[in-house]
Image (cartoon, rainbow, N blue to C red; front, side, top):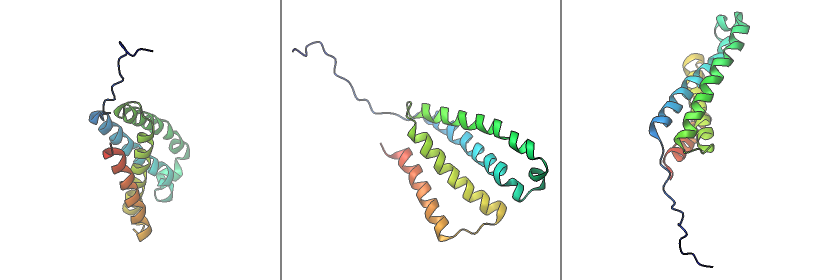
Length: 130
């Protein structure tokens, strides 16, 4: 069998679309912060406690933000799903830690720092490992 005329597959390096990535991560950060307030807000703020159904309905725009975030991150990584999932997980852990410390005065323990280190490590692997 002759291979004449067969075009070899070119394995081009997958480039990250930085604009899509930044949009996805920014919207994801906003969605994570709103989710934190939606789920933990009633523990600190009476408004969330007194407006149960409005708090529940916050899930609709938050879901739209998450969908837009994931769409942009998947596009940033040329259709790959895993990077968006792992970046979203890492951002969620970072946002949760920061907001629980800032709003609820949760202590930052050694265990919390180890988890933050792991979250940042996952983020770095997804962003910089080729």
